[in-house]
Amino acid sequence: MTGLQTSPHCDVTRWWLKKIYDSMGAPNIRIAVGDGEPYPTDTDDAVATVRIDGWRTLASLVLNPEIGFGEGYRDGRIDVPGDLVQFLQTTIASMPASAPGWCARLSSRWLYWLQANTRRGSARNIRHHYDLSADFYKLWLDAKLVYTCAYFPEANATLERAQIAKMDHVCRKLQLQPGEHVVEAGCGWGALALHMARHYGAKVTAFNISHEQILVARDRAKREGLEKFVEFVEDDYRNISGHYDAFVSVGMLEHIGRHNYETLGQVIHRTIGEEGRGLLHFIGRNRQHAFSPWIRKRIFPGAFAPSLAQSLEVLESWNFSVLDVENLRLHYARTLEFWLERFERAWDSVVNMYDLEFARAWRLYLAGSIAAFRVGNLQLFQIVFAGANSRQLPWTRAHLYTDEGDEKDLWIRAIS
Image (cartoon, rainbow, N blue to C red; front, side, top):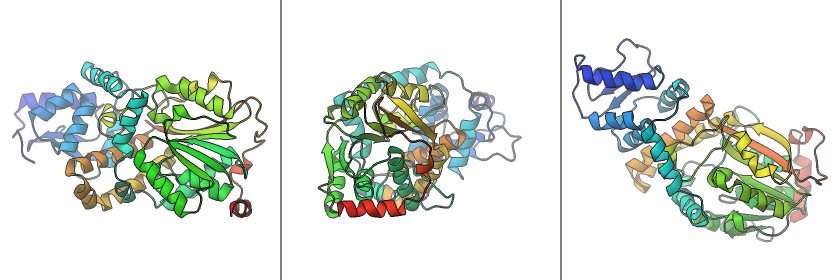
């Protein structure tokens, strides 16, 4: 890396490095500008030494640390040799819970305005991320293209096994029965909808505004002979109509914006009424906090991770009863470890498909997400709920952990 040459006698550089280091909570890392001596100098066991190319990048870190680091790493102006996840985990764990600076607050508010999840804005935000080529996601997801937290019933389970287990976990929580009609909001490439139909005998209507994902999902339904049981609708969740036995949303709540929670609750209520039940699966937080501005800028426009209390705003106005809440935070960290490992193996293909800056941005996003889930900055909640008159209320949690093999064979025959 080329850049500013420094020395131990460069007091100005040392002052700025100390300022940045202290603002990070003095983590067990070192920071250097150009080829200069790292700060602090008395840390021999640091997990990483971050190299900053020069004063311009240094200034960006002072003004807006998160955007400055993200853009600097993406552009190659900041280098982190060695274990990027360990560096990020150490840094995140050390960061004090102080309010962001004025520049960070201003950029965050500007992004919220620019990426507002109106009907048109939601379509634009989703296209930015999910309408990337399915061939890109095939490089590092499982074969079914499940792009949400997996569930590892055993610590050594493969990603493929864990994603199937997650879909079973969701279906068991909903207590799906053959012949029931399910509506899914935000269906990705269709894996869960197809799983509910094939293995639980359900009829599924799945909504998604990603054109590329809908095309893949429809093709899969046709190839798997499930067209009569699963309908993939390219439309906004706000346009869902009809009556259903169950509502499920896996990984969509993060993308609708808190100002739309009341609307989502209204949609759920008009589709399942007082008798139905549902499940929300989403990335959240232990307390209210703004979502990463760099992730919103480069990866997930319009994203917001609610606290558990905020997420319940979707349900409380409509008198839904919360039946079960589970936190799968460590399962998401493990899922992301698989994704990052496969992403790194496919590095050259990703660079050839897009470019180096794109690849570095996605590496940082995956590595940063692992670190955030490990440390606890992010959580993964599953909430099961039901209408006031629902009769399908579980007495215990036994149905989640018993062997379902014979049951599933029966349901497969029911749709064959």
